[in-house]
Length: 591
Ligand SMILES: *Cc1c(COP(=O)(O)O)cnc(C)c1O
Image (tube, rainbow, N blue to C red; front, side, top):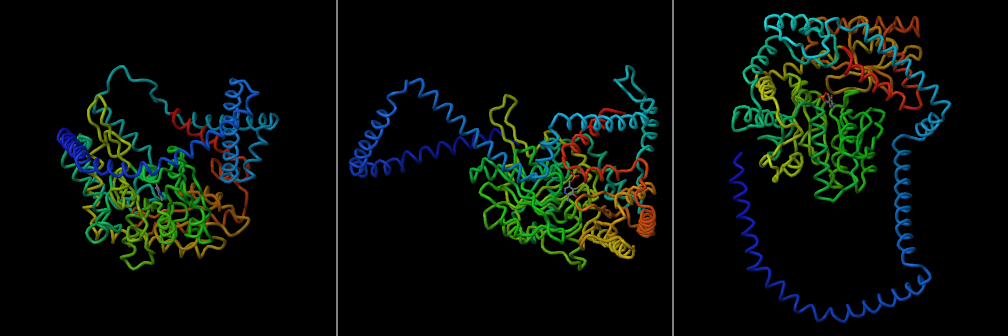
């Protein structure tokens, strides 16, 4: 970027503005002030007299106090008042956000007796977990940089062996919910070729890698064109690529927060989301110091406009809708939510991480898809994942905005860094141009007809599964999902869905467990669309359900049912939180 000429131009513009002020505005201001000043003088005099007498009265009544006492009293009183106000506000928010049971349970667990018991139990669970991880440790695990290098040929062999330890991509016969989104080998090989062609590139240096820069522009444009932007939609829609859905969401939240700080002066930001909104929004609230207002969803598992309207305050910086949401795969009532936000001048983000490359094509295939994109007034930003249903490699996503007004708040521009003039569009500095190339290749390779074909096959799989579940006694689909995610729960009191899930895991399926209500979901992708895949899934689900119904309470060894059961029963969620942290520690440290 030619920074020199840009700053040069800025200087001219600034000088012009100063000259214009001196030439035209200054005499006008001076003239009016001369006329106004005499009229204001008596008023000012009167005000001074009033203030004088008030101050005299106060001084007389405080005359008994020494000046230092007065100073000290003022300081202490101010500090005390501010502390009381803060504490009251904090207590109110804690009660609102966590609920009375949580707060009371947490207080109870602070009692020394209970704390000791819980800590010992916690340690035992963590120790067991560590023990089981150790059992799986690889004998050739590295603990330091090998002193001598390894020849490339040897290493390739070793990498090949390592690759076989991991889950294998099964064309058309995936047994995993989501995760693998590609249709087939040919697609995969094309993306690998795109990666290797651009493996040395970095879009931060746009002058060195113009092709990569243009591919990013085109990926954003192609994505915008299917989501209500582009030549046939709102031409103002713009965006940027990120490393994934979470980063797209973090970026949009950060940009909206800073936009509302700049335009409305909001310094205690709040964000409104449904309990079913993706975890990335909770992360964003934590990262960016935003108070999160989590609203319950309706009986249809969707967030509506009425709850949002009531929750919006003068501190709201963003309202979130999902199309569809991750847990239940159903779309929030986007039109209502966006209207509620727009009525108060608040930005509205639609999370299309999962639906961005499905819903537009589902609508074209004649499916029931309520409006959800930039065609809906009030929607100000959208996230859509090229690395999910865009069928790209992991590591890319797109964040879109209605206009540049909000997008610019995701940028960082630094003019006084000793390292030079600096502008960066998002969180990352250097990025991989190769990943941009893979996303580009995926979208261009599939094209509109490719996406229509893939979507048709994916939705047919979801339909077949739904029909299959309806035929299983004691199982039910949660509402009627519009897209590729189908959530299932047990209607039979003696059938614990988590136990069913553990049996399914033993049979090689990897479904996603959900909470409140207890359920599991499967996200169908192009990797499930081979013959027989869904039939086998339904058969296994029917058999596992029958097995649990016949012998409720039998826990599969190493399953997650006991963990989810305990988590649901635990009044103090901070215990569960500590388990998760211990588990993450083990994942990062043991091998
Ligand atoms: C996957 C997903 C995300 C987050 O995406 P990552 O790419 O895993 O970071 C956000 N929202 C929804 C609805 C998703 O399904």
